[in-house]
Length: 307
Length: 285
Image 1 (cartoon, rainbow over the protein chains, first blue to last red):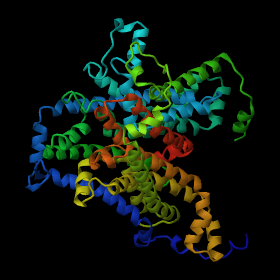
Image 2 (image 1 turned 120 degrees about the vertical axis):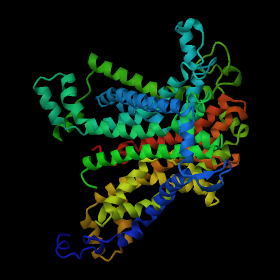
Image 3 (image 1 turned 90 degrees about the vertical axis):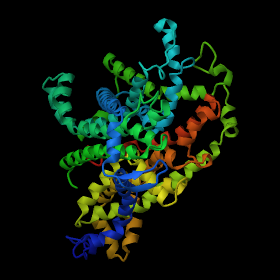
Image 4 (image 1 turned 60 degrees about the vertical axis):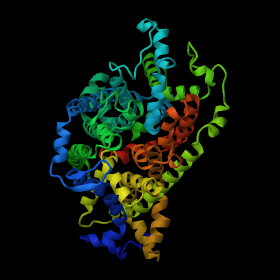
């Protein structure tokens, strides 16, 4: 074995300054797939947003910013935009706040830890639509788990709550389900961050008499900065894009009362056939995601060893 | 390293504080699977018990027959077949395009390598939801509306990034020297890849396969938009047709979700170790 390493002919392709032409047979299929599935639809979306389009989808020539004007004249847009901001901020911040202590908890040593971690993966692995439907059943007016529990505890004077149709509760229910399905991924990202903290640092602090809270506050939390940043950015995008929860439970209704900009764009395009403004909103949504993706790329590039 | 080994050898000793930690962890675990336990109980109730007042948590008479009867109550055989075909094909397509790309990127420096990796990473961040109008029009342009082929291609495209990033990490971990030795011994590049590199990277391949399969299995928005005939629906959108059309027979609805959820949960748990690394593209470690 050792003699071979003396004069091995270098693999041809390992020479530095390879041109991308040599790489194409290897990365070409992946590039083609990305162009077909991501780049083409993005360009098509932008093109259509500048075109006059009928409800049947027929194109009728350049329209300038006409579709955008129609979109911004829509009286419902302002409330939906505000709700989208509330939706994203509340779901992401609640998710992070709950996941931080959960990650700390499942990082402790206790019997059956593996099973607790497995249980926490379930909402992550299960279909979001199906999870939403299960919650819908648990929140059912007459037969649901929640109203049953409220009755047994003697709350609400035994009166059941119509969680999904009562405008006082429906949006919060949606927020809660989004938090529920976002926690597992977030917790596991933070857990990976906790596990990467060297034992020696923590032990040294403990030897010096630091309390566990001091260890967490002074050593672990600062070292979790990267994990938290990545988890926050990925959640921002996922939650903004979130469609199945709202669609399965309220369809954005009643009216537009639980719509976000994502469900509103879908509703305009595929339910109301109001194509023009829907493509304009699609571009606005796309631009927002693009912005966060650029931030993400900057952050990961800065934190990754090599790109 | 030494401390780690020592920790594992020490026998666990119960103290009040540790008991409190363990109990709260068990309760958290129960909390996260409770909806799915509720689903299982409901799927085993007879119809009469669903709306009984007052409701009971456990079925009073366990109807295991629900799991047999559901197949004739709704076309779930068709739904599952669609899901299996689309998920398997999307997974194969992801492997075909991502293995060569990941291998080349791990082994070679070339102009545009960084740009390619960033482009791949960017696609992971996009979900089809925001682009759905563009995707719909493109699929229509190619005459592929209401086909599984369209679902396969779109799902493969959006899950490619996970596989490329994860696998390039695995390929990079195989020492070049072993591969070069094989080439000296007269192996072709592809033989070297197949006989030497692939066995070492098997855990990465299994993870990429399972991840793509589960993600495609659960995909909702594209299937909802592109598939219009009910006989071609995958289970993720087919399930919503229960509501209304079949008089919301919740017990059958939940036998179906149980059949659709349990296998993918087991698959997903089996790749737990590599999930975070693949999804955060190496930025957490």
